[in-house]
Length: 363
Ligand code: NAD
Image (cartoon, rainbow, N blue to C red):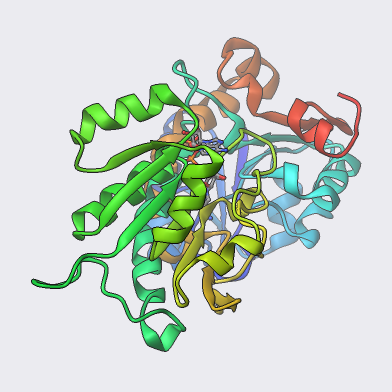
């Protein structure tokens, strides 16, 4: 199989879909690997590292796409990339289609086979290709939130851990999954007062057992959300309905109940966001203020720590990449019931239920 790794072109996306170590594994399975010149630079891997692993460096982006059977990317294809896709391509990347109708229709028109990292599952119902980036985003959410609480960012001027004689800040994390737990752990580690709200009692039990009460667990009723809004200096939004748009859990009206300068970090923004006032931002301009509340809504948070993220991503995707390259998409998906839900678009049809429902399309 000829595997191609384009350079990411989304604003401030520095990750690369395959590290040189990953390229070497594919080459050992007798596949051909072409990496676009400079693709790994943002993540600290230069062309020489890929050459040393045995990959070919391709300077001609048209040739890179035209010669490839399997295309490995990080972010959803941008319009000029969608235009390069053909029915001969298998695309393996993050897609997050439920909030992106234009992209969904573009991929349908391309005729390509499009497999999304974020809808591949594991034996315990988890999302193994979302998890590593969720850990990164969760840990970053608290860094970003702490910075946003500073006066210069429009924040209330609050230091998360407080100091001796001054109480620590209150942090609420809505959604106690992979992002939420990582955020809560960071905030707790920094000395904040932390609560996690979730609608899954099983998950709250797991978290309570793990943190032995050091992090409060709260069932996410409307009343509990109201209280979190009134009492928190920092709220991290980390809910997920797999493959579907995020529910809006904090309305604009509720912002009036927050202390001015409090901060909302909406990690779920890549699924449309879980606060009514959220809109996607970039690392270049990550925050904005609505009704006195600072919002941080960067849709590709892990891109800012590209080296850590690229390595974590390749570690997770590599077994699936090898299966696709070794067997072809049809056999690889047929052989693995956990890989099969990754298929989102094939030959002009949406094949993932939540995406079809989001846009009233037939499966
Ligand atoms: P996850 O499935 O591990 O956790 C989601 C949690 O939300 C679950 O525990 C679930 O019970 C809970 N939940 C669902 N509905 C809820 C509700 N109404 N109230 C409270 N809790 C609710 O998912 P995850 O990996 O932690 O991802 C969370 C979100 O972060 C996703 O939208 C994901 O796409 C996003 N994400 C964003 C970035 C970024 O750069 N912005 C990076 C990684 C992940």
